[in-house]
Image (cartoon, rainbow, N blue to C red):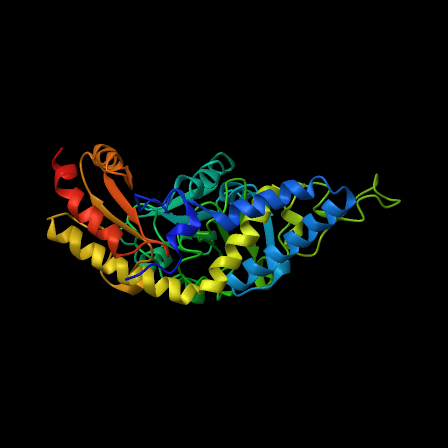
Amino acid sequence: MNALLDKKDFIGLNGCAWFFSGAETPTHLGVQAAVNDYLTSRSLGPGGRERNAETERQCKRNLAQLLNGQPEQIAILSSASEAISMAARAIDFRPGDNVVLHALEFPSGVLPWLALKKTGVEVRVVAHKGWEIDEDDLLAAVDGRTRLVMTSHVSFLSGARLDYGKVYERLRQTETLFLLDATQSLGVAPVDASQADIVVCSTYKWLLSLHGGGVLAVNPTRAGNLLPAYVGWRSVEERLGPDRFDGFDFHPDARRYELGYPSYPTVYALERSTRLLLEAGVDRIERHVLSLGGALIEMLRAHGLTVTTPDDPARRAGNISFLHEDAAAVAERLRRERIYVMGSEGRVRLSVHAFNDRADLERLQAALPACLNG
């Protein structure tokens, strides 16, 4: 299993095994060049602003292609957390309404809804079964007062992948909106924005870009009329028109969520990294990741470890997790061997991306026994 993306094109992959992509990815040389291109654009005066605008437009075109959507559905914010909070405040919740989420959700997908409890909104948390979320259990928690269901496509905790299309097929027959967090999947697995009302994603993990960016994709079919609770000069039409002190009109598309300029270094980086992923082909990346991940699961089980990630390739993506009572210590011991993993919340998570290969598994295999036992 050779890597799909050449390790030599990344900074920091020489002499290490990087299973850390669910938290951070190494810098691609093309991304580094893109940031330098932005810095050059800063010195071009009006021409630099024109380059910024065109790079942003192309970045949205790339993201739309990855999401099977349209560029006008895409807003670029500061983080996935901001995108979720913006969506939460755009919905007109009333006392007695409820939101449905689940026990394997990341904090950024929990906290905005907890903040609504003081307004009388109920937060319903669906339990997991063997570290997976059953789609029927999620739907069973929905009733006539459920305003929104939120779930991650792939769990940050267990690596389990949810069939969001099944959830949306049911919810689209109701008035309940569906928000999908693709932070742990977009870039290594297909994501279809037409199968959710709102999709959010961070930019510095599987998308191979930088901090300072968050993707918000709005499906206009059911969520197009939502109005943000916040407004900025970029979110409105005719911002310097003759009536600007009397009122304003939001943009008719996802731009209404963009308050001001985005982090242009991130935009330049994201344009280059999404182009890289599209050129490699997300379907090819997914096949590579699932194949290597399957071999990784077999290895971990051979060491007697309890793997929380499903065997079924349809139920996982790049994250592979196993339980350990001292996960942070295991991660630190592996780090000393230059094997980078995430160890927290009672589990060790290994993330497989397009630049990983069989040599990474062999390095892990050699180091794992000693690192597990201290």
